[in-house]
Image (cartoon, rainbow, N blue to C red):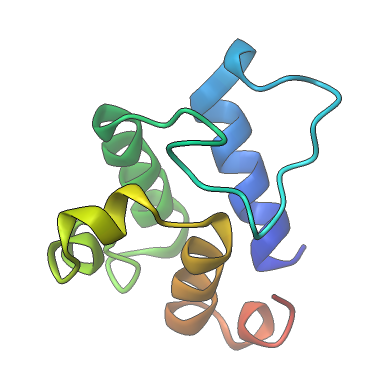
Length: 95
């Protein structure tokens, strides 16, 4: 499974019924504008990432380094790259 597949699974789980079944989550989608994630959803995504990959994938620390406007504009691809860069080598090569 690629990092994008992993993120799709996590986002679909967090968003539940809010994600349309016929919409494929792509790297270019905005987490907030296109998918409707709110700050509490990002907390849940962060917890799921830490549970799945361990403490090296700390979304809260990653977001803390960003300007609020960058967090709001963050794309799925940014999240995928973050996970791939900090997780198992196999995901880093399969973004």
